[in-house]
Length: 193
Image (cartoon, rainbow, N blue to C red; front, side):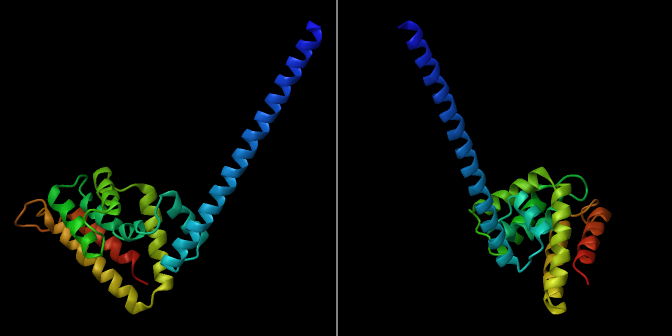
């Protein structure tokens, strides 16, 4: 009788392991399907918000977790670059970036502004730069020359405000450092047809 019971115990264990395997596999497949669906929805939302349909751009935006309101903050990424142009940023530059964000409609106590502050503290990344350049390229294709000029002029105005916030190298004598001027020139170039 004990041989029969041990065989049943082994069979029960095998069935249990098999069921556990398929449960885990099914759960993983459901999670994968959910992720694909959520990614598709987020991509569609981002495409609708930007008017941009370039898959590579949309995928990179999603990898950077830029969705919904974060797009407004991402538009201000060049201001983070200006703030960090000389290798660090100060509180006056940070405040100028935050004020630009608030002027763009980002609420002062929002999670989005928190992410922008995080970008300020960490500094610009190469991936952020790459995606910004892709974004600027798509804007050049999608916006009319007048719309692009308006967007560019607004960004450049904010960039000069950020650059002048710290007073430059010699405080009163130079309002913008050469590094800040270089970043602003690059911004103009990125947003010019």
